[in-house]
Amino acid sequence: MAVSGTSSTSGTSSTSNTVTGATTGIANNFDQFLTLLTTQLKNQSPLDPMDTNQFTAQLVQFAGVEQQLKTNETLGSLLSLTSASTATNAVGFIGSTITTDGATTHLANGKAEWQVNMPQAGSATITIKDSNGSVVYSQTKALSAGDQTYSWDGKTSVGAKATDGLYTVTIDAKNIAGETITAKTQISGVVDGVDFSGSIPMLKIGDISVALDKVKSLVRTA
Image (cartoon, rainbow, N blue to C red):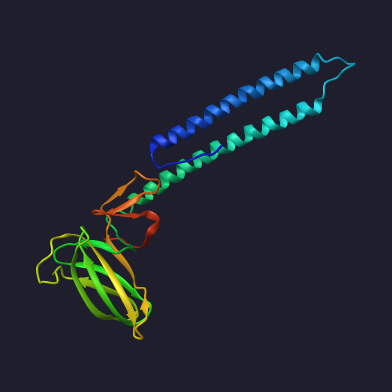
């Protein structure tokens, strides 16, 4: 029997009730089986005794099933405790600044930033798109090898001021030899909420959702 656990209270209750009910049912059948076996053994004919090996095998099977159900019940309880612990830990992230892999971040007060990692020094064409997928800014610039921060002041390619919101960066990079290389991007932001609707708590940075297990680093604010 498979046991599943979720972070929601209803899911945990359903799992627990199912396993408990099954355990109760098998326990009742087990008692009935022992009563029937004992009665048959008491009333068997001395001249034609029953095959006790068969009853022993059935007894072992019943014991194995009962043990498995108890194991599943224990696992269900452990999953519930783990989910509760994970939820508590997730709430502890609120107010902290986290960093995660990603290309979409917020433009606020004329500023948006991405952490960029270049495996080699070279040049890159940097393109920024709004939430509708429209290109609002593009430039080509030299980037050094390693980690660095790319900042955008919110000005579009035609000099207009972009509205605050979500923007996605794309970096097409090449090394000094002109060979294509992959530049990785990360985003940072302050956690202002947690979404528990899925199996893994999602940390909220405004409209951006970050899975708890995808957090690369955390800085707690005083």
